[in-house]
Length: 576
Image (spheres, one colour):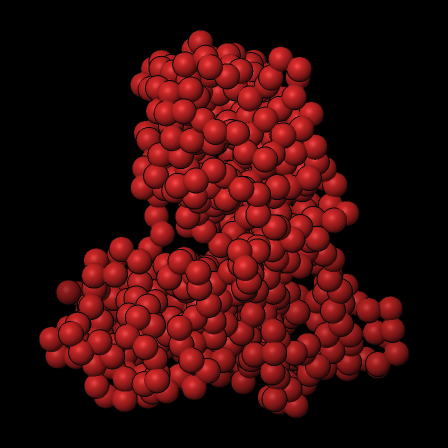
């Protein structure tokens, strides 16, 4: 290197050092530079704190964004608080907002002086999340006033509202759904209940999942399901992994359970932990195996306790031309064997049980009267006590031993025993009073829940068993009332998701049974009005519109495909 280059390089280096030192000397105690850090196991870069030159309105917006991250008691959101707000109760509540909200100065903000202000947050609430992690629908506008104060030329929040408000997108990013499993008190089987827990390390997820079980089922399943954990039950220590790779759940307060209840409790634990990728579990009671004969349990060991459909054909059945037919590849229709499909009756509607081979049909008699009949799919049908000028909306319960129907506007419940004639059973329907005409209903194939379409709205509630064979419909929650309007039909696509058909510009939507998540299905090729919808786990969705029967397989590039040969009166249905 030449001496000139050496001198030039040395001078340039000194100049750079001087510039850097000058820059360092000018950095204030509170920099406006937004430092990024890595959080938890997500690897996502998030702001370390507020932008120091943010005005009060921007500060509150950033506070809401940061509130979506629950780790370390909402440490990210706490950076926006003044020292006087250190006792902020972030655990008081969790409110989920839609994406769009705004911040304005409250009308009396100017009265607080130049160093104080009151910012009003305005948005739309989707609902709240309970302490156990269950989402509870409560749609409506929300306005909250938040006090801010200027400290050393920077704005901070000194009067935050109790609890946190989180946008739906942030909630879905930082929380994960958990299917917790609870017990059907009548059948001794298990059904799932969706909760939401913060995304964190797998072993922490396991402890959090057990805490959900200890809290019991959500309000949406209350009465229909119970937990086998006694009120005295608790974890002796956090869920840990043994050297041989088995997760250890050590409980106390469960020693008084019967052998059958112990097995149900163990099944609740194993199935719930399987949802957070825990494969093998050792359930202990005060340090000893809860099930002495099965010290280590997997999901496969208790799979038989889950109420799942016995049969679910690749394609739905359909009522068309007065007969029940089975659809097949290419839209081919084959009448089912037995009186449901051989023309013995003029069938206008039907439903097949997901357990066993039972079918129920509505027959239109020569007088015009509708009559409900039941029997084996390939056999003879027997009349039930239900008839009327119009009988619609058939649905079997999860156990496959009851058929429900709407006869002349009134919901009826018919028991279908393995032997003997069908008989009507009492049903408390007071929760339906004042909701309007019932257009459709669908029992969850797992049991415990009922989806209802009434007055153009989609609703879900528990089915609560009572004494002496009685049953009641529990509290109903309306799903996404601002988006799901003019609803005409509903069916269960899975144990936690419904397919909803509407007479609107967005004819088909998928919504979770708690109303948290709504996804619109492309409506290309469909023509209003829609008349029916059929859905099932892993199966195409079918609808009937003004032009015929259409199917949708669910891919991003898929469009609705018309079923050749089906009439505009075709009514598709999967067992359930």
